[in-house]
Length: 506
Image 1 (cartoon, one colour):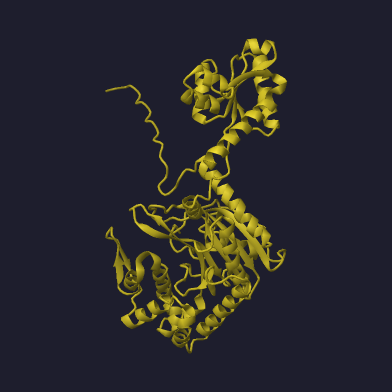
Image 2 (cartoon, rainbow, N blue to C red; image 1 turned 180 degrees about the vertical axis):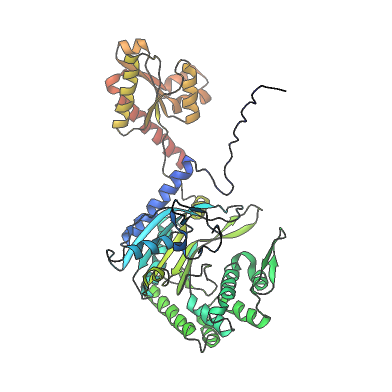
């Protein structure tokens, strides 16, 4: 028998499925984008709010615990008093809970925006993650559809502030009351048909993805996808399906308004919805937002069942190349609608609310496609190298580093193994550092430093072939008094910035 202890098995480093690490470039791009979004929201008079990642599961509304582990669509756990908590599925349900809990202290209408991660316990796929960021804006306590019209205008202004020009986006608007009228007209009214209505909504929401034929299958018997997975349909007959497809197929609202009114005739909600759509159309037109920016479009339904009135979607209309090399329209980057019943669940009284959510990751991808992100430069730090490890020398290096930082210059003192100086310059090269500061014992004795322009040095080493050219070129390394360190580094960084500007204009 082998008494030797088994060698501990090395832990495998692996990213959980459906999650992603964010690099410095991605984080900076998101920060740049969300700062512009925040500026528009603030300009409209909205204030920030932050809610926790976890909520009690029953507060999420859609996912009430109905089993030993309520994890359909959400990630759930039990806390120490055996109450189920779930990672938030979106930012709207937590807002509803916050408003209800603090109702007496909140000034209505309550106008707020929130940015943060949400979590979906769903099958991940290409571009579909279990954790992603949303950026929401909501107005609570405003019953009139003028609040919905304002949301649509703010969405348009936000996209333009991000550099998306008119013609490359469209805010599409519909009203769930109209759709409710259509469903009632085809025999799907009443509480007993709630499940079937939800299946119809989910089917219509796939119109852009599957087209009318695919949606017809989802409205009827069901649809099998390319992988062989079968999605059960809503079970409508051909006449019902034709009426639903007519409704969502309307491309010119004014042209089809009469037939639509005929379709929802006799349904109170349907008629009310048509009136509200007409009112929103008149408001946005009066404010100068034409149909090239905000358009009435009955194909917009939004999949969540808590929407009760106007719904809207921000769609980018330019083409991109997908993973199969096909040209496709980029599509939706956000949307929302009126959800008058969500806060009311906690209150026992009607509390109107409307809002929209931007999918930050998807919008960031769109902006990268347009070349609208990453324009602001991030300069890597100036590297203060380490030649000696004694206290006096280290103190001098640290002092220089802090002086650069105090002057607003990004800087770091080398923290690795300083005994191999060549490795420090390799580190600076890999990191893309613009400047290296060097001070050995001789320089320290005379209170000077060597300043190496790493960008110019790299260019010279690749371009200059003779001594005459070298003498005429900008000096790549020079010695200056310690007192002139900051000024000289600033001068070099300014020259590098000018070089980049000239190169960009060539």
